[in-house]
Amino acid sequence: MALAAAVQGGRLPAQLITWQHQDNTVEDLTGATLTGKILLQRQQAAQSITGTLTVTDAANGVFRWSYSAGDVAYAGTHRVQFTATFAGVPAKTFISEWVVKESL
Image 1 (cartoon, rainbow, N blue to C red):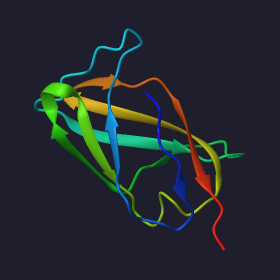
Image 2 (cartoon, helix red, strand yellow):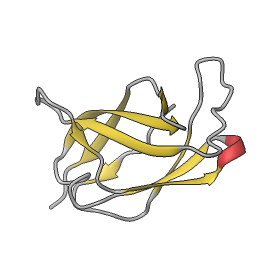
Image 3 (cartoon, rainbow, N blue to C red):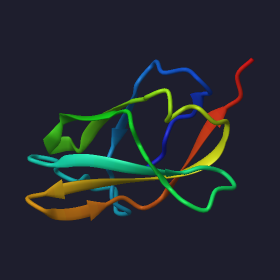
């Protein structure tokens, strides 16, 4: 699952993401509540994604990440992991690298 780069401080465009497994099948997100964590470059603790994670095509594993100001506050190569919770049971993506490019 590759994540598109973002620009520091840029909250648009939102990112469309397809939750894929290693075998390229998708996670059916029907009924899931999504959350996520960002491990900022050179940090020891992950912070919660505070932007909005919205399922847009559940059967095909597609969701939108609408960034909050906090999500894109720091430039660098970060690590991101999403969690889908189904009736109290979590599923997690593999950790992905996410680049936030510097802004002037």
